[in-house]
Image (cartoon, rainbow, N blue to C red):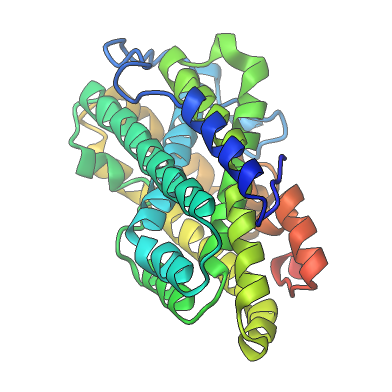
Length: 326
């Protein structure tokens, strides 16, 4: 990951110009008029995934599509939460700890791109909802959502108090999004073209701006007062991973709403028929699978394993929780 120096105005400006030069357009650079191919996967399922030995090829496609929708919704919600928390985690911070006009421009561009990414994933969800004869709200009833939840407000409060928890989540999600595409790329021919294109373009911009979250972490670590800094090192990452994990685990339980949609389209009917198979496993088995071999879900449930975030945590001697108990 390219990491410019926080106070090198020339490098920051060059970094910004590169992002702006290669930025894609939400309307012009996607084939939004193309149909989603429901015979294609969205994400590859690993051979050791807990359900793989018990389902047929058609069911694997359905499950792959559901997990793919969960990925889209999770990224959309987390990037949307960043935009909704912009005042606390960016505007207030940069007003209190100014760096340079170049850094401020870089930050504003970061938020523009994150908002664009959230909009792109939202458009795909809308297109899929139309394809499968449900409203967007009905589709989201089985997918992770975060809008204005208590968890989001806790992240916002942490930012207001000078903490780094939200930026730690941002740093983790940036890395996780990049890894998702890397896992998808070898299976391009098996994946719906529009879904693949969305994640490919998302990957391109994430790789160009992923270091901004770490620049913010560096700024907060450097400028905050010693008592807050010590407390932040002790609690912020634990808070970020516990809230992130509790959110995603809780949202995964929404699949029980599938039965309300099963008569709307074969997609939901087929998925509802998988529920009895899942119920044959113990809670411990399912939890173990989610943490270790579920596409993307395993990444988001173990944010401390992300390479660059892990390096930052080690450098700051930040406490971790889940890495010790899983």
